[in-house]
Image (cartoon, rainbow, N blue to C red):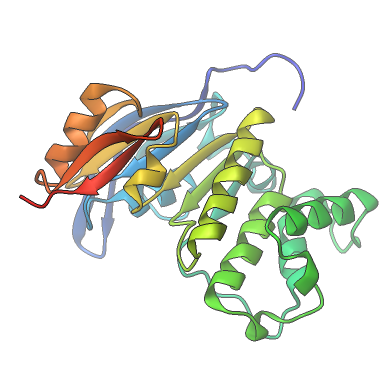
Length: 261
């Protein structure tokens, strides 16, 4: 990543509508997600969070337009798009007989010529990604030999190996125990320090509050977008979850606590 950015926005969407089967899920969403920042997407179950992320990744049909780093996404060749934007989805399946090293190397495919073997840069990127997710020691093992949390860390390594400027992550903390959830947070901070952009759908509200920006979604619409430290963001969070949580400061960080009244 060099030179001045052409746009202050990593992703922009206008008039986004999408449906699953015959059921409308997103209803005319307009958003601007800042470049070089972490935006967390939160909301109740069934709000359309994952569908929105899949639209941004161009994984499902939709109406409306999306721009990536200032460019209309529909006009960006698939290979170039895969270099500029990486994806980590929920419950992704990969062959149990694939080695951890080979799964992570899949993240380098957009950088490789047709039928070409891995370059030195590919090997270095995969090693860096596996070490960042503490999966390096399993590189010769197969996915079938790993637990759910270990597999999730390998899939995160695959996304990191792309070295994309924009990373979209749908429920990246799934199956991770608390220490490795903290490790994920550290990885995100490192990405931000490199000038990259992270957009994540999270159920863990306290982790989502570590982000720079928060997008609150309900019933297929964006209710609020703002800084995670803003009082208006906290009020909307409490409201969208029917005031069953309270956003309070603990040890210098905002956290979500269940209300007991």
